[in-house]
Length: 429
Image 1 (tube, helix red, strand yellow):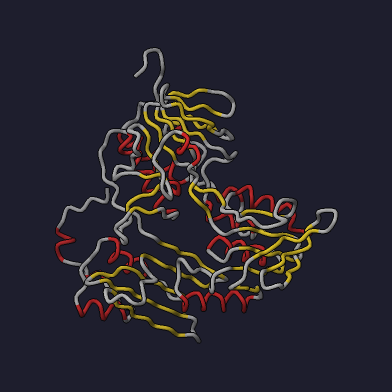
Image 2: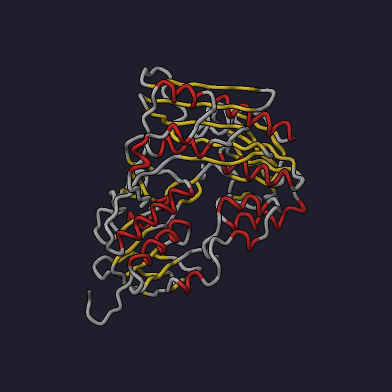
């Protein structure tokens, strides 16, 4: 510790991972000054709810993840609308855009993700939007009254929810997806087909196997629509680019932190620089299913990573149990959930796949077994037993022939859990 300086824990980023870190730190260290620096004007809020804000289904105050007195109660100095320009390791300070130098003893990078924006001719100009933050929802809300038609580029979770929200406000919407189906990363062909059917029956259009070639404008720069690479043209008053996010690693990279697809961390969420940790959508951490380090931008994982980073920052050595890929979302009232490995290699003999499909009831169940364990599942329509299936994956329960049969038939039961699980003094930390 440098003489004459007040050393603190500093968190860059103020999302769900930061809240996890605050909780983890303050459980074991209530005294060390804690500073959280957030680039947005808002304290931590629920990003999954931004689509519901755009749809007019929730009020802005519903988005807040913690009450107003949370930060004060945790003795946190919260600096909003503040960006960090530089990490100076020699001086152990971060330098903000306002020129302020903030000393740190340990530093957590929770900078999240930034929108992936492909190069499309004509994209620079008015009426083109991203959809990853609350400011994006507010921008769209301010122009809703003049919108008649919109094109959403990206048929993943973010794109479909943005499209549904606009459609619920009376906007004609077409979703453009370059892959052969929507939701190709989180769901399989059958599940995506059911979801597409529900979306199209509601009145939206989906165009797959095609990409935006140009965002077309008139001579004054006003938006006319989108030209696709199959030569078709979609008229639009707004274009929403919602392809996904990539890890926001620029600050880490400039500080010499080791980067791959995200910031590389060990089991303690620590980077190659001892006093710097990372968590959330920016971190490349251990994955439960694939047994390798991955960036998995999932809400629940971000909090858990932050919590374990916080505990380790506070001196409580704790190994992060691992990330579990999970998507749980509804489309026009159709509930869906996808967990773990749901698209195994078709030519691999290591997997067994069981499916149940009822098109009339719009119900689908898929279970993927690898060896004697459940490694992934998809539920569409009926998701009542989702938590039970997830427990088999999370705790890596061994599955015998009887249990496999009952799981595949949609009849999981807690009595199928191994006896020794209940006999252990199990600690979720």
